[in-house]
Length: 179
Image (cartoon, rainbow, N blue to C red; front, side):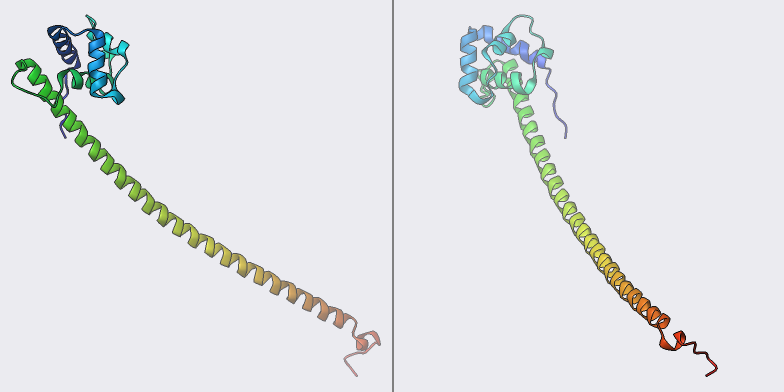
């Protein structure tokens, strides 16, 4: 997806022109931005810095500073024929960028959902494999325990038979194979 990159320095210059053209004060500019979107409103000091002569774009973040100010001052949703052509152009470009960012965000959320679903499926497969391996280990341990008990019983039986053979009354009386 192609996202139009806005020259933020031009946005700042355009905002400053509108600020002067409308005769806004720093407090009035802050009030406009705060009334427009109180949750995303930058601080009064930051808004004053944007409208200060010589403001540089690299000193401001688009998403958290310039976009909320531009949205409020330019009123992106209200493009009308009374605006000067430059203001209309910036409103159009910024509205397009806002729409594209919304689409990109939706796509990111969709990818995130797919990733989490795939992760859950892989986790479930891994858990099943792990459970199967644990079951096989338990069966092996049970077989080893059984064989150990059988070996112990055979060893006891062998010891008893050997003891009986050694304590045989015929062998102790000097019996021989010749009798």
